[in-house]
Length: 414
Image (tube, rainbow, N blue to C red; front, side, top):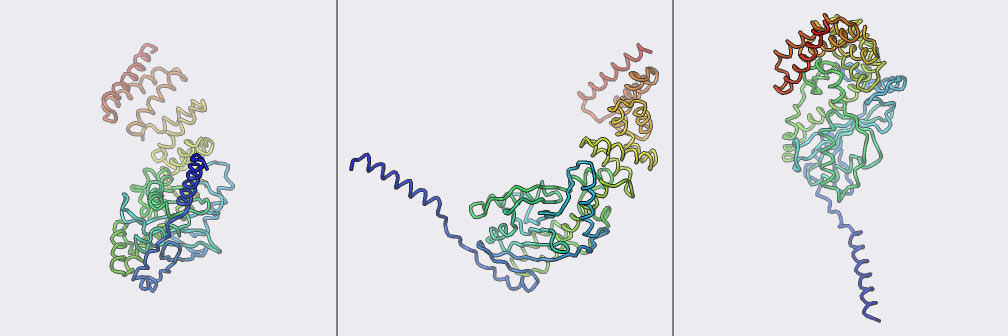
């Protein structure tokens, strides 16, 4: 056999051996079961064993007539029905609970590679109600088993969180990436974050957008004997060190309330977005009307803003008049736009007040040919900008120049 043929055979053999080496995986070394496993099971946590180790689970079932705060869990299906009936498109619209998961985590820190998720909380539809599954990390050596059991590597799901796009899900992705050699690939899932929706609905109505405050002010639920979130990492680490799970169960209760409130928050948000004005403030409904306008659902937006102006005082409805004025102007309904800006003006402050004055000056000048009124609006705007500290000096100079130009033109016309 020639040297060339021998070399070719050797290359084939090397290639074959390399291929086998890539395909073959190192055997999985399962961590030891923690010595406190029996104590945790006696406290109500079920131990689950899989190919990668052990994980603890607390599971609860809630019937449809379970009431959390002011809302029954069955009202989630009413919410789906409302989205099915509406003609308006909206980012939070869902029409069924198929593959729907309310999701919340507890972690050993806020960020960094050393931060572990120690509690994966999932609330999902089950027969005749909803099932809560809380997976607890047995210890850091069992992290692969813990992540695997979440089933986020199976099927496409719709995940609902509260600030989860910024925190919970990125944390899960980080931990999954660090363990990717042992885990199936993490699936891409649809994600709906109610934190951002709540900010759109209750901006300037709720002082802080913490979930506990939203619960108390909008969902009719007040926590009793709740564990503060910042104590959760310390409690978990102590439970692993001491083997005693009593305080840890309080953290699970905190997580349970978070998940139930996610469901009822979705119901409440849907009611506000799909129904007419009921018991909320003018600020809330104005926010919703503006949100629909941003989504180009102009008819729905105008309907809500008009309802606010009809059902609340002029002072309460000032913001609604302001946003309604812009919509009417876009539709070239200048008479109604002028009326809306005039109704809003006495109660506006800061930028909005200045912008409303300039809008009125434009309408008086170009549509009504009332140069005297246009000049008066312009002078007021000029004075407010001059005295204002809302802008940088450069930006303020540009605005003053633009308003002064309008003032000079109106004085010539007059």
